[in-house]
Amino acid sequence: KQEVTQIPAALSVPEGENLVLNCSFTDSAIYNLQWFRQDPGKGLTSLLLIQSSQREQTSGRLNASLDKSSGRSTLYIAASQPGDSATYLCATVAGSGNTPLVFGKGTRLSVIA
Amino acid sequence: GAGVSQSPSNKVTEKGKDVELRCDPISGHTALYWYRQSLGQGLEFLIYFQGNSAPDKSGLPSDRFSAERTGGSVSTLTIQRTQQEDSAVYLCASSSTATVYNEQFFGPGTRLTVL
Image 1: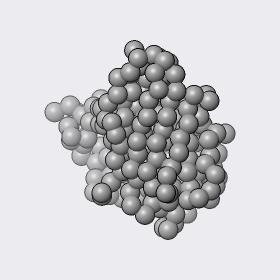
Image 2 (image 1 turned 90 degrees about the horizontal axis):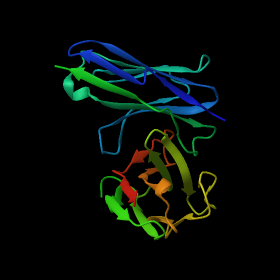
Image 3 (image 1 turned 90 degrees about the vertical axis):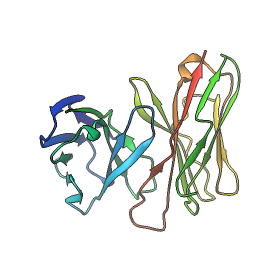
C-alpha cells in the first residue's frame, strides 16, 4: 500500500527566501505525481503534475522534481512571497493512472513579510 | 461550467440525520472521485467512478456511505444516520482519460458538520 510522507509538516520563512518542500513515497510504481496548493477553507489547486517518465516540471517560480527510484519529489519555490502562504500537498497515482490519488498530509507554509 | 462544482458549500446536520452531497464534474470528464479531508487525518479516498464501469467503493468507511453517478455526469454522495466522526470536508475531483496525464481537478468541497 502506497504511503506518502511530507516533511516538514510546517515551515515559516521570511519573504524572498528560496525554499524546498519534500515528499517521499514508498511504492515507486507510480503513474504520476501531483503537487497541490490548499488555502484555508478552500479546495485544492493543482500546481504541477509530473509524469512517471519525467524528471521535473516548472511553472513560474515553482519547480517540481521527481526521482522515482528513490521515491522522492521536491517542490522548489523561488523568491517566496506572502501570497505563497498555504498548505502544499503531494499526491501520487499508481498503475495505469485511472486510480485514486494517495496524499501526504501536507506542509503548511507561512511566508512572513 | 469551467470547473468542478459542489453543493452545498456548508452543511450542518444533527446526528442521525441523512445528508446528500452533490458534485458536478468538468464536462466531458469520465472519471469522478470522492475524497474526505478530516482534521488531522489528511485526505482519504472514498469512491471512484470511471465511465460505465462498476465504481471502486474500497475507500468507503462504512455501509452508511453510498454514492451514485447518474448519466455519467453528476454524482451524489449520501451519508445515512450521520455520526459526529463524519464531520469533515468532502471533496470531489474529476479527470479525463482522453489525455495521458489523468490530472485530477478538484471542487471547492462541502464542509459537513454533524452536531
